[in-house]
View: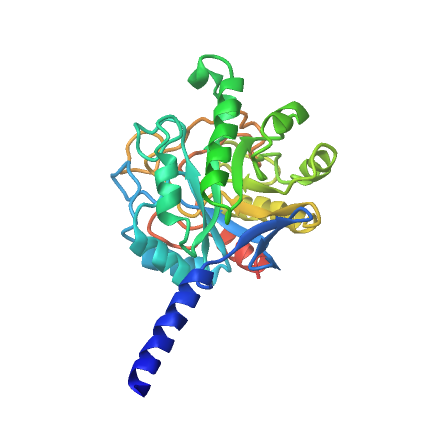
Length: 332
C-alpha cells in the first residue's frame, strides 16, 4: 500500500510541475523595461547569421565555437534574421546562458513567413523553449515599399495583424520589429500590437539622439536592433587609414556602446551588427570582397560606406578583431 502511495505522490508532483510550467521563462514588459522571470533584462546582444566560406546559406557548423566566443564577450542575446528550426541548436544556446530574438520575414517562400501565415506554426512549436526572448517581425522593411505594392502601409498592416496572432497564441513573449531608423508617431499608433520597437540606427559613432527622440513619441520599450561599424575604410578619414582598419571599427563601437549604456532608462539594450564577417554578401562567397550597399547607409563610421563583408567582431575564421574586447568590456 505504501508503495502505491509513493507512486501516486510522484505522479501528482509531476502533474503539478508540468501544470505550472516552472521550467519556462516568463518574458514580460513593465514600465518600459524588459523582464525575464520578473527581473530586468538588458539586451547585450549581437546579430548572428553565420555563413561559411564559399556558401550563401546560413549554417550552424561552428555553433559550439561561436557560443564559447559569445560567452567570453559577455553576450547574453543573439538576434537572428530567420527562425532556427532545430531544437538541438536552441538547446545549446540556452545551455550557454544566451537568449534569442527570433526574426520572421514577410515572404520566405512559405517557410515560417508572415505572408503564408506559417510563422505562427513556428511560434507554437517553440513558444515554450527557454532560449526564446522575443518574436520579431521584419527587418527595416520600411525602406522597401516596392515589396508591398508600393505602399509601406501594407506592411504595417500585415505586421500588426501578425503580432496580434502571436499574442493570441503566446502570452509569454513580447513581439518586436526591427524598423529602419525612428518610426513616426503615426506608424507607432497604427501598430498597437508591437510591444517593443527595435531600430536599426547608423548615426556615425553616436546614436544618443535616438533615445530622446523616441521618448518624445512613445512610452513603449525600444532597443537598437542594429548598430556598429565595419572594419574596412574606403577612404582615409578622421585619422583612420584606408583599407583594413580594425581600429576604426573598435573606436566606433566603443563610442556607440557608451551611448547605449548611458541611456538605459529609455532603451533596453542593443544587438550589435554583427558576430562574424559575411563573405556571401558581395561578389565571390569564397573571397572577402570590398563594397556592398545598404539603404540609408551614409551614417556608417567613419567613411560613410557600408563594406558589407567586414562587419564581424570576429572574422570568418573566428579570429577576434580589436572590437571583440570592446564588446567584452562594455557588456561586462
